[in-house]
Length: 180
Image (cartoon, rainbow, N blue to C red; front, side, top):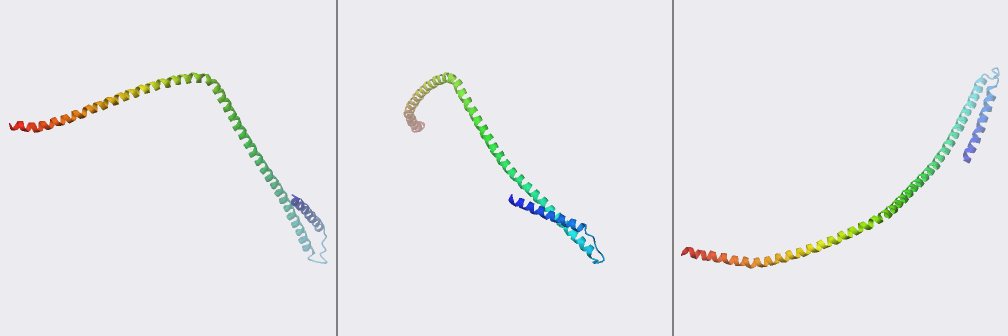
């Protein structure tokens, strides 16, 4: 910032000097009898003064533009930071509000459903008891069927052996009968 102030003051001094030189050389009377090149030298000095005025004016204008751009950029940076902070604050506030609303709704729902929940628990409990009884009767039936299957297989094994013996006898005995 201090550099810009120094630069502006220096540019103003240079512009004032260029204006002073332009006035000095624009009002000069040319004595062509003494020096024939005097007019050309005067025009050259006037040209240099005008050139210096334009250069210093343009430099001052550019320094003002650069200063304005730098202030705008710094303001933009601070506004962006403020915008991000406000956005974060708003989102956190929104999240907090929605969380509180959900908690309040869940509290209300639990209060309303507690009465219905007791009835539902009782019905579920009776259903569990009936299912347990059904399961116990099914286990008894299964055990009875298992024991019947075991007894049938025990009876089947001796019958199978007896059947095989009879088959052998028929085959051996049947051959003797054919020969008779």
